[in-house]
Image (cartoon, rainbow, N blue to C red; front, side):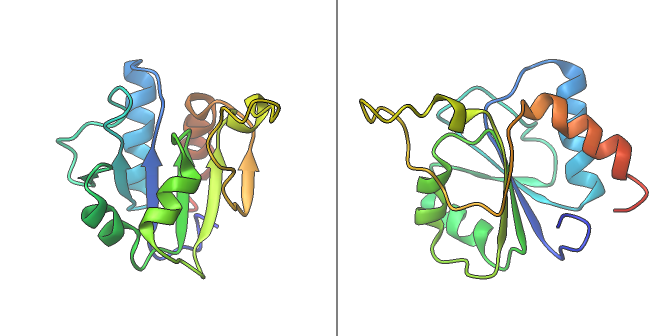
Length: 142
């Protein structure tokens, strides 16, 4: 999906502050020429000085612009992905890839979780482990 996309949007959610993890996220964004959205509800997950990172998540008008004309949304442990998709408006043709362990903690008995988003591919893993593998394994293909 990432290889064939014309425009990818990375939703950079919860992440470590390990310099190697930061560099891997930047390398992935640059390799696929993705736009990046960060979230003010969590700690920093992407360098705001990088040209690809243009939108803060609390800027709903900016978020809608960011989600426009996107082929693939790559969510890297985004907090409330269902809400982000709802605020972004309809994206009938965009594929959504979720890299997160969130679905593992949704118990349901007390309803203390965010909505479950409609996604095309779920990678039930820590994004800080997946992103370097995407960069390493597919750099030539992007």
